[in-house]
Image 1 (cartoon, rainbow, N blue to C red):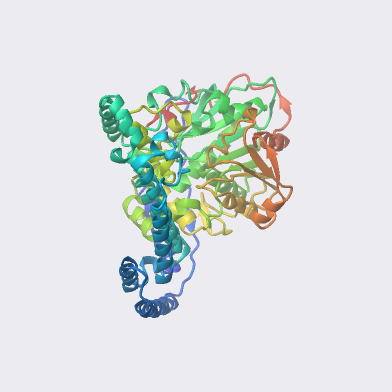
Image 2: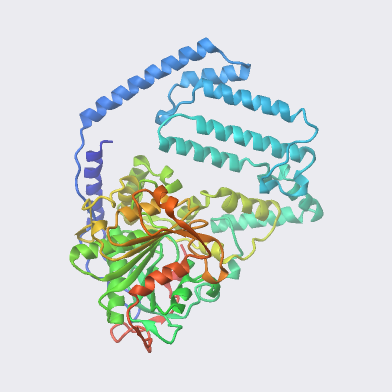
Length: 619
């Protein structure tokens, strides 16, 4: 589809969604407030396209592919193949020509892979014992000898062959990434550890328990089918407000979309300028307040900050028409306004995590465009602002997928949290899917309690219009990085106009927000920026308590144009990045003074104790 046509169509969809929103729900009990009237919906400036030129380009591409196909067919017929199996495969590949998405696997590459595979199979069976596997799925002694050892060795060889074949496919980068992803999913699924007939550990337990493990495993599977997800932890071991999300605080404001929590200070003196945390709206906020031992909220309190937290509502069908603008206007911007009024400070410190960071940066830009200088400093944790490299999630998103979602839920409906959770789990299937298939179902074991995995399974719904706008304009069209291209909350968005000094954190092994993609934000924000890269992944890298002194992080004094240039001059520092952030943030804390005597204010009285009711709503 031509670019210009796509934008015209999308603008109509956004306008239609805005027109059909319906009445807003009232706020909760006493102390809540009715949401203010909706601001103008998010829009996009039109771009132009040249359909005729695109069509001529497509014709030339098709002709070129046809010529390449004919050449490959002729070459394959002339060359032949070294084995009967290779001959049949090569003929099939030649007959197919260019695969969907412009993919192609050359007969020469396939022949080399087959020859290498056959040689390695021959070498394997000339040895008395199969090669030892370094795969931790086969670490048990029962995998080291006999037919199970041979099964593990053959699986490893076949997996390597399939992965090399996927890597040899020629085509555009995104489609090749999809081929690699699908191949890896198949490889992970077909592990002999995942099946009772080929898993010696599960068989041994079956015999030792006289069938009890299999019976229990079946009960576990039926229970998970009723819940709609694989149990990753003992979900009965945790309760929000009892042993997770326990930092003392008070809900001081709520509307149809958020509750705002003010936490009880833990120091004798606090900075006058408060800190507002905006968590990802696709998860519950307590990832930043799991346990006292690993709570980012508790750490910020210990550093003398007055901390507020946005708790997103787990939207139900009556909020299914909420939009991206609603999340900005009645989520982030409204929270900033209330925190300013309660604290009596003209500016506040703002922190956003993941999608919460995207919302926070967009809100900061919208406020600047309105002339409202409300943000003193901005912290972005594993956040995408430039979506050119959106990590593994990018392989799912194309025009067809976005158009399908817009047709199904773009004007109203829910993107169910269960669907989002399943997608994220299959980004790491061995750790978050098949590991539990083996232990819960094949071995009949109960998953141990783990607070992080309890949070991971506590999914959140999103309204369809908001979700569709987000994936089209961010992931698909990458328009947030273009000054003035998007209009959100009635303002033209220019990230370069943000004046607040900004701290940007990326995780080295993050598969959702690759660290180089997080670094790209340093080139969009023109105010003073400090970039820090921590070890580990999307969640574990962020939640790295300072007192444990684990892992390490990298810092540099400047932010050059290239992430690799930054890395070449960065210094590695042992331990958590939290103290580095705290030392940076203290400059914006304001003068030290006695903490407030009570939460909220006369206008915003206490509603209920933290963590509030919104976080307890299930998807």
